[in-house]
Image (cartoon, rainbow, N blue to C red; front, side, top):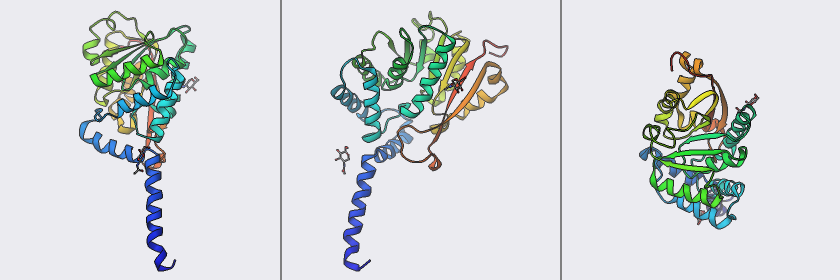
Length: 274
Ligand SMILES: *[C@@H]1O[C@H](CO)[C@@H](O)[C@H](O)[C@H]1NC(C)=O
Ligand SMILES: *[C@@H]1O[C@H](CO)[C@@H](O)[C@H](O)[C@H]1NC(C)=O
């Protein structure tokens, strides 16, 4: 390469790389993780509000599938979000589908960690008619966004957002008086996966055949949950399959450290140890 061409070529290449990084959500993903590492994955800036605005302005009211699609499009191309996402979402869809094969009719679903209601809306969109989903969110601002997202999707009758930690809400209605859930999706603060699972078992909120889905087992990672499911105690209570997956909304290959796992555990019924 001759001398005078080098500098413009470098600038041009830099520009292209910057554009690619910006178009894919890599910049947003990196800044999110830098921020998240300080604030323990708490929502912070107004990204959730921008997502809601995007969905409301680009999708017709009452179309749950369009809402799910619009969230995926936005998260792939603009800003990264910690939704379960379109790829791992398929594992969740399949777990719900499997549950509905063994439990005909509407399902009763519990979700820990609403965030922007992506998985709640996705689950209802894929579940049998009449299914009801209760979802717990501890961050008020996020719960507000989620309720507006759910209203836009037209699912207020099927999804109930409950505000607070399971530890408190399990002792209050509606959770206290609800029968055991058919499906439980655990996707909240990683510190509470195992303790909340045990809380549900103790409170009789799982029955033989209940399906428990755990997200993010490898990234950010919940080693305690994997350990529990692989322990004699966990194996006595659950039949678990770990499904290989990739961190949501990332173009980077799993070999770069983006491998994730979703656990699907079928409850075998109350045991001597639970
Ligand atoms: C990056 O993308 C966003 C949204 O797609 C756009 O508003 C912004 O101007 C872009 N930044 C650069 C430096 O190109
Ligand atoms: C659904 O059931 C099929 C058949 O038993 C099984 O192979 C598959 O792994 C299950 N999927 C999930 C996500 O649990």
